[in-house]
Length: 418
Ligand code: NDP
Image (tube, rainbow, N blue to C red; front, side, top):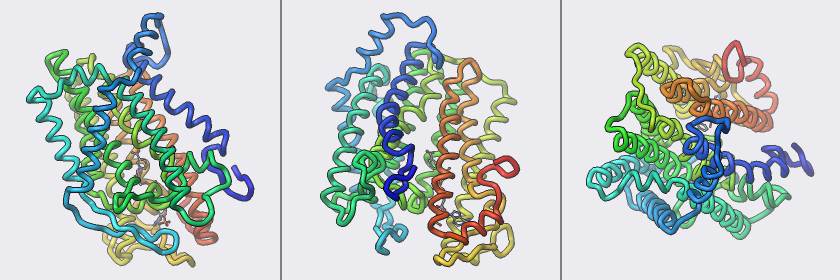
């Protein structure tokens, strides 16, 4: 949507307002379905007592505020004190480059180790934490609103020059500043990975522990879900630098969309398969386990190899791909667009890998409900929309060269289909 010559994304101001209101409601609804609707997406046999219990369950409590405060403080402390390599990010507006400390892997492993130690020694009671998940969710939603207001004001007072757009709502939703920092502490990098990805894995592991405490065992589907998700996040931290060239860091400003997505959406909705499985202890036949592992491995290899091909090509355009010199389109802007390897198959073959992995950690939940498939469905929509945004952005950045590239690499995501 265009307003006053500016391109307004996500449905313009009306779309932004709807998303600001409805995204938290979707998170609450999914939680309601998991806890009070037997894991089904369509409400059935809901009583007034269920609704009252749900409402009292999501009231923010002092304990939830304290838990989240300690969690955020601990993650921030790790980002500040854990040693790591300093890496320069991509060139931003005005040719400046920011330095980032890459210490996520240690922070992730330290957090997991500490979490397991606290559970094993009984300092944390997983059942009590699980009981308070609704309150915690509300606290994090409140936090994401408040912090987005802070980000908006911080941007207004620190960004020199014109506002990103003429609309206050749009600037609140998509963010005022690109890379807000407090001193050298990069807020966007922190929220992109620490409370979000680490929080997601902690919640999935918590649900596995709750299953163990309530049923006496951890089922094979639960093990597969936790293992696949753990590998995905571990991979993120093993290749942490790769975040520095993503749309999120280079192009998207830091506002409500990323703040809510990172703080609330990722941890609470990406972990819903593990929540769904808590009371379901069916096992899987060996052939199904093998197929699921193969599906995940295929998705992972596609995702990792495609992303690495582009990353390495951008670092060294002469490095061979599949034993051959890479082919590319030289743009007038200066950058080269790779058209070899997976980048000859489609313009975002990496997204195929992501969707296969999402399917692999939903299928262990079997087929009694659509709810565990919320993630792959939503994620496919997100990636299709993301591809369109990237297409528009690259179109205006590279002009005729982008058109030449698109003629050469015809498919957007899935070769032969889309
Ligand atoms: P890509 O990694 O596909 O990067 C797109 C950018 O790469 C473009 O903007 C362009 O930037 C550059 N580019 C595009 N085509 C070429 C080419 N042929 N050769 C060289 N450079 C090119 O996109 P994303 O940042 O969207 O995704 C990164 C990964 O993160 C994906 O695997 C994705 O699935 C995953 N992801 C996961 C999410 C989650 O919640 N789990 C959310 C979002 C993404 P430039 O300006 O540099 O030319």
